[in-house]
Image 1 (cartoon, helix red, strand yellow):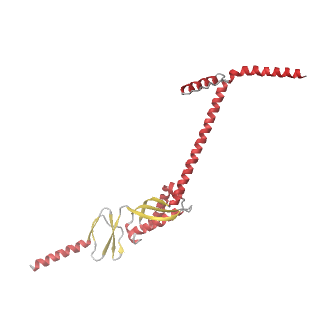
Image 2 (cartoon, rainbow, N blue to C red):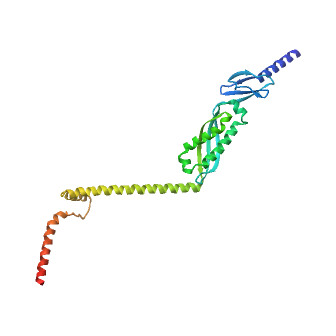
Image 3 (cartoon, rainbow, N blue to C red):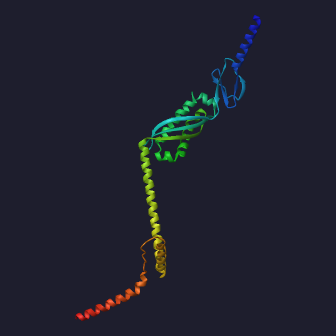
Amino acid sequence: MQGWIALILVIIGFVVVISMFIKIVKEYERAVIFRLGKVLEGAKGPGLFILVPFVDKMVKVDMRTITLDVPSQEAITQDNVTVRVNAVTYFRVLDPVASVVQIEDYRRATSQIAQTSLRNVIGQSTLDQLLQNREAINDQLQNIIDEATEPWGIKVAIVEIKDVELNTQMIRAMAREAEAERERRAKVIHATGELEASKELAEAARAINAEPGAMTLRYLQTLTDIGVENNTTTIFPLPIDILAPYLQHQAQKWAVDAQNGSKSAE
C-alpha cells in the first residue's frame, strides 16, 4: 500500500515539474526566453515549447493593440487659456524582445510619454486650433509619442484628444463672442439685402421712366390693391402727366399777367 502511495506521489511530482517547463503561448502572445540571464535570439510562439529546467526563464508579451487612456492634463495654451484635456492612445508591441529588455514597464512608460507630450503640444497650440483643428494636433501627438517609444519596440497607431474642458468664465466669454459674431452677420446680411433692393428699385424706376404709360399702369395697379382692403376712405392717385398741360398753360398766364402788371406800373 505504501508503495502505491509513493508511486502516486512521484507521478504527481513529475507532472508538476513537467508542467512548470512545458509552456503554451497563445496566438496573440510571444515568449521572450532568458537562458542563464541572456536573452535568446527572437521571441518564441505561438504554440507549445519546453524550457530547460532551472536554466530558462520566460516572459510573455501581449502583441494585441492596447488602448491606453491618458488622464486629464491641465495645460495653458499658446494664447494663455487654461484648459483640461484628456486623450486616448492606441499602440501595440512590434518587437517583444525590445519591449522587455529596453524598458522596465512599457505600458507605464508609454502613458508617461503621452501625458508629457499632450501638455507640450497643447502649450504650442492656440485655443481655436485645439477646438477647430484637432485632427492636426492628433497627428502631431502620434508622431511625437511614436518616435519616443520606437526604441522600446512600440508602435503608436492612433492618438485622439477626447474632451477639452474650459472654465466657466471662458465659456461665457466664448458665448458672448459667438453672439456678437451672429449679430455682425445679421447686420451684414441686412445691409446686403438693402443694397440689392435699392438697385432693383433704381432699375424699376428707370424702366417706368422710359415708358410714358408705365406710370399710369402702376397707378391703376395701386388702385386695385387699395380696393381689396376694407377701407372707408379711398385715395385716388392722379398721374402728374395729366396735369402737365394745365400747369404749363397756367404758368404762361402768370407770365402774361406779370408783364401787363409791370407795364401798368410804368
